[in-house]
Image 1: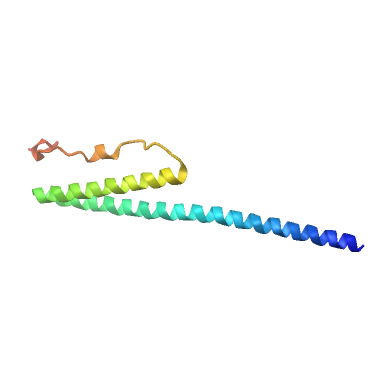
Image 2: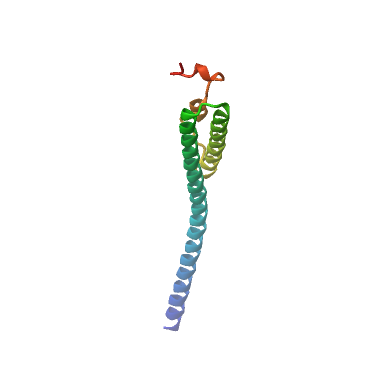
Length: 121
């Protein structure tokens, strides 16, 4: 009788130990995933704000076509490309290496002469 009680207690303690170790392992994995998601969300927010800056600079450039406005627009675009590279690095580090479907830099290529733009008269 006492032997069965000791065996039962030993099985319960072993089960408790296994459950606790499993919980700690899941907690460690969840912590890593949460850190990656926080970095990804922060970078996505920075990219969104950068796009808003580009939109505002583009709109300002439409009304005032001075060289300083185009310089500001190009600066905003280079900041966006830097943030995009940062986002790619975070994505490659966190979820494996996935190729980016399009090169965003081609979207921002502007001619050196402002008169070469489409629609410029």
